Image (cartoon, rainbow, N blue to C red; front, side, top):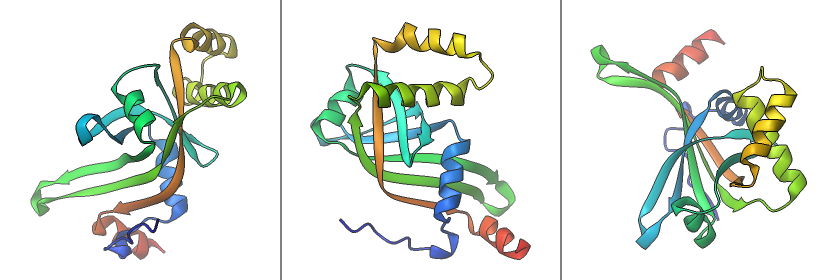
Length: 167
């Protein structure tokens, strides 16, 4: 599949900038094809590593049912959303990922992904506490991997101008 090119390419973030947005943020919105063909978008915590996005969820429910029906997803992270009332605009920066999500099956990959997720959200916790927390919830959770097919980022033209002026 060929993905659309961004209409306002002057505001497009580089791949490296997109990756930095994914790394520094803690929540995004996953969009899937839900019940009856309705879109289902749900906010969730995630970790970006190895050019993939990982998140955990329950073993059953709307999200898992939708992913089992169709693994094609989009995932959006908002990095900046500053309302500028005097200009009737917002200074924004966001990234959208298109990819294929699947429930992970390989135990080693699952352990690695959940470890990366735990470190992201509790970086100063001890390894002992992290392992205990993972073990406590492990049996009840699924780990999902989004393999990225296409990624774009965009920011307000005012932010783009500021970067170009600084170069």
